[in-house]
Length: 224
Image (tube, rainbow, N blue to C red; front, side, top):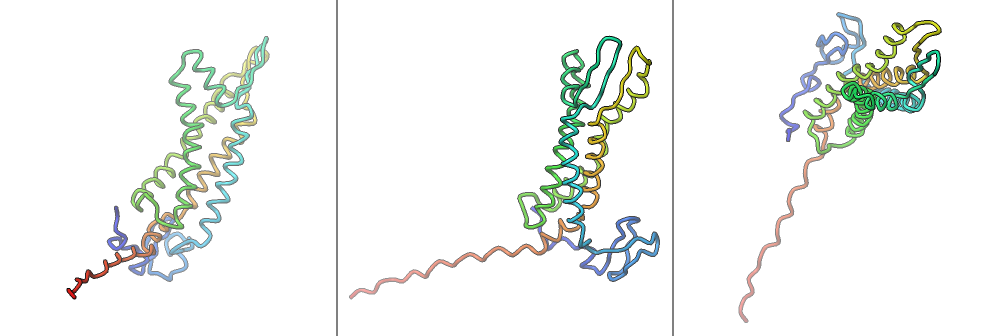
């Protein structure tokens, strides 16, 4: 378990870092002299943006799983597949590896990101079971892995551009592809809006543990 007293932040040293170019300036500097970005020791509106982007991303993710992601038309049939339905059909044809990749990238990772971002945001109110170092690592994983959720959109885009045989066969993206792309974009914006410096602030302002109550002194009875 980390000890908050052993952590010295840039603000404690009278410094503020630019979140765009990472240049460090004295605390109180309002504008980065290198890139021109506004400097905030702690962004006062960060959590509002986090929850706003998170909510919009969640609203887009629901129709992304209910609407068809891919439409396939041939001379004799027309078929529409959702994300889970397409993965199930691939598994029925023996393509278990591709099905697992689609499920992990399109279902497991997005749902995990929603849970992780909400947990990090709610955890700023009070210290939890995870220490600040573990929370920082979780945030970095969420921020890095979010872009890989676009693999389903990439597959649809490649198939739509390659399989265009006129009246014989054609593949076109369904409405879910747009909602899914928007969901990924908004969750990425939500993760990037999160000010991870607040993870360490909550540990610094945590109230100290109450001192133990001393036991009452033991008195010996005097003989009468």
